[in-house]
Amino acid sequence: MDLIPAPLGSVRLPDRDFPLDRATTLTAPPALAGAERWLRSVLTAATGLPLNPGRPGEGIELVHDEALAGEAYRLSVRPGRAVITAGGPAGALWGAQTLRRLLGPDAYRRAPLRDGGWVLPGADIEDAPRFGWRGALLDVARHFLPKADVLRFVDQLSAHKLNVLHLHLTDDQGWRVEIKRYPRLTERASWRERSMVGYRAGQRRDDRPHGGFYTQDDLREIVAYAAERAVTVVPEIDLPGHTQAAVAAYPELGNTDVVDTAALGVWTDWGVSHHVLNPSEATLRFFEGVLEEVLEVFPSEFIHLGGDECPKEQWKESPAAQARIRELGLANEDELQSHLIRHFDRWLADRGRRLIGWDEILEGWPAVAAPPAGGAAVPAAERPGAGWRSRAAVSSWRGFGGGIAAARAGHDVVMCPEQHVYLDHRQADGPDEPIPVGFVRTLEDVYRFEPVPAELDAAAARRVIGTQANLWSEFTDSARDIDYRAFPRLAAFAEVAWSALPADPAARDFAGFERRMVSHLEVLDALGVEYRPAGGPHPWQRWPGVAGRPIDGPPPAV
Ligand code: ACM
Image (cartoon, rainbow, N blue to C red; front, side):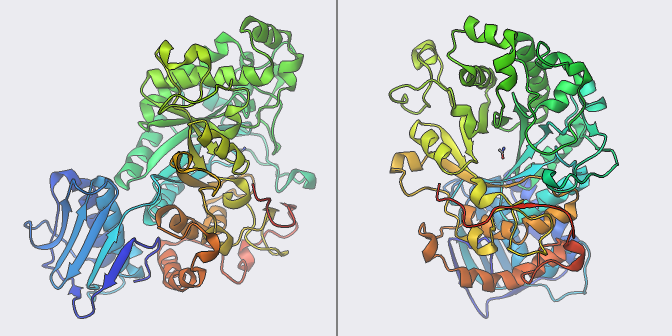
């Protein structure tokens, strides 16, 4: 049946197939109506069959079984009958995705190629995910991605049973989310005058403005569309670094005592800008205002506040920042960054949400001897006695080390080490890869990525709540480019995140995965995904003459 990601267990039952026809019904209880609606919409489009609602006990039926975990499902197909038994709405959607896959690649088209001939193979499938957080990051800040392409990417995630879309909405090069009380964030910060083409050493530029933003209604639409497909959208508002675009729109957010921020534009280079936020109370209030609107749009438990790559030069030079360090009784600039992050950690917790940030957020985070039970290491003043304990989570991107330290200190961790699952990195060594950056990470490398480091003990390993592949967009300015870098590797990543693969990467059956990929590529073709062919890019997928920054040799172990 070639399922990707592989289910926990499956048995093919020859001679027990279920041919669908115009009389076949599709039924679900109210609790699973979302999955029913989704399945009917995709299957009526692809097959032309009406799949009218029927009676319980007939045709294709979704059944709720609270004894199963929320994302778990069982699927059984017999002549005249297909039952998806699910622990909850998400499990029902994953079961529905599997049922669509059993109908073959043409079930992924938006109009029927033929009249009839739709057969569900007789089977028993039992399935549940390994990790609760199975994510992908889209960087819509470096290059804006139109809303329709974001919705299309959500379809791709859901087809692979990935359930978190991390939207990197703000950066030095652009601000992409409408904030009604601060209109200049979109009037001014959502576009730049030109862009670099390729790596910065190449010094090649286009001479064309680039920009775009999502209105709050656009984002509500994306959130609701994703929710119908069992995908949660986690927004990222990056601070206190990666903020040049915001400072260009509101110069008072910058370190005005050391730079003339009024003269600043939205950055037209790639890299890490030194124009970071000033650490004043007014800046905290400004971003509380931003986040109040973000919380209204995004219902996700987690809100990502970045916290990565904040150069400290301006704070070292700024008398105001230094005065702030003294006033707060902090040791240095790292602790100042930590102070800002912990402010929002608590601010989000007070509103029933949880902060997640890149692994730098633990720098300057005052250590305590042992984390309180069930919580993360927090400074003494904020210990449970003070009525508060941090539940911040960490996205471990600079390798496994940050995630290991975070898990041991009691933080939840999403493993996304750049050496392994940054899908902007090149997929092969060779001159034809478009703008080749980073390590070579082949389909097989991604398949053999293990998110839980062997050195974690059982309690710390349970802190690894999931894994995520990240698609940074300096070198991808369209959905076509994203397709190329994401696929087919995101299919391998989906199996790592969902399936019960051997923990030992060497013990994984990559040959078996490759065999299943043959028909999975037909699924991607039917979906219209322009993946990288195994033999190398099509001529139109190359980008001759544009400089990249390949890193030679295998990635370091941690
Ligand atoms: C990152 O790649 N700076 C999170």
